[in-house]
Image: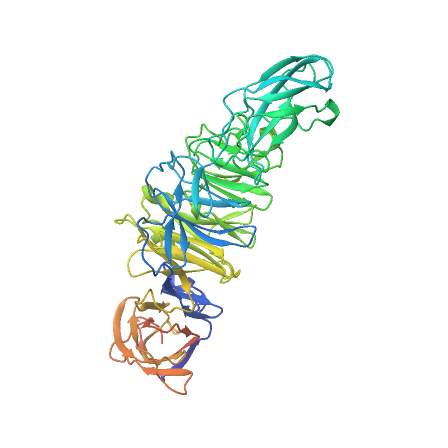
Length: 598
């Protein structure tokens, strides 16, 4: 039989290794490394461009966040095992730690978020919730004053004769974060008088820049109404309290306690911080992410023996990932009873907070059973293919919390960095194209990212940034930077084992054609033909430096070693990023297989 031509006009189907050969389409690859599906073609990934060219930080970077203030300033905040830093042009400067702060050292990824003009950070076994600016890190929360005020007769005024009781709070003007009230001071006042306040203690918390005073109505006990503010943290007196009942403000809140001391994960949802210590779910006061009431706690099946690992806002729901199930919360009230708790997935939980990400109304997470799950908020499905499952199966149980992920809607990506058996660091990057339902695998010269995140930079460009256990920050998949900080990227793909619709014949390769751009720089293109799903029958190193030819033809004869099925492996190493648009095969036949009908 004569040589015939076969076209793969669409090769953008991603990886589908491990499936039965008949189930793999010609557009899918049995192996895919450092190429990713882009429309109907394969594109080699962008490079890793080192941002911190001025030198490495002296700690591994286990958290990053773009800090954008209301006045337009933009900073990249980083977090390490025992401190925080800020990207300063091309190097990282330490943030000052407030007096008394000592962060327990570990490599758990930090959870970092912004509310108003402040950054907040927490991690497992990290010592609680921290508040960050571009220069300093403090422990979050404002403690209530420890001492009572003194109320005294202030002379002639408009107040009626009664017993008056007063308290005060510590307050931050910019954020409206307020403490619980102080102990009570009281005064039996005569008629037509006013009140002078003293012994209003100065707070030692540098975040406090005001105090607020509250007073009861005549002879009332336990309820206090706003009188006025002392707009500094210096004065200890307030003279001339002559505010009548009709002019008093709102009541003081007793729900503004300190954050729980051992928070591990948290997110802002509906203007509150929802956070967990791995067992319970806590929520802050409205508009005050540092203030927690004693009753602001939602039990999420606390007796099931499983940990709460992940929290993620998803529209009008708060997704709650435990290690056995995934739940969701709805409601906007101020008490535990105002929220409804429901089950989204009752067979598989979530093992890592940082794996739970969303984009374009789709939710993803790495779950129990070593699989990746997708949800639209109502249905759930396992999106792990056999090849991806084989990589996920190698994640050590004790390192599952170190799986980190990001979404990159510019390319429709959900990107995971995962550890592997035999290593204490992340080793593989798995990329899922959620519009094409296709996977690919990225690797790197050494480790995979320890932390990866997506954000908008100061020019509102969407970027992926990563760290690599070396104290440096990298722009991940930088299209303008084609190497891994100077090292050429090796990328390869292997087609399906194809019988080219001739199942009864032994076949050989004659030519392989690639529709790919010309590459004039230093590069290597290695072509291999594999027969019967594994044995290499031909190999050749060629060049893409072919002028005036979109299609590039390469002789790759295997007539002397035919097979019933043929595969082609293409390996490209070079400085230039390339697209491979289509493949064309010139395939011949020799004879029918033994036992096949004529």
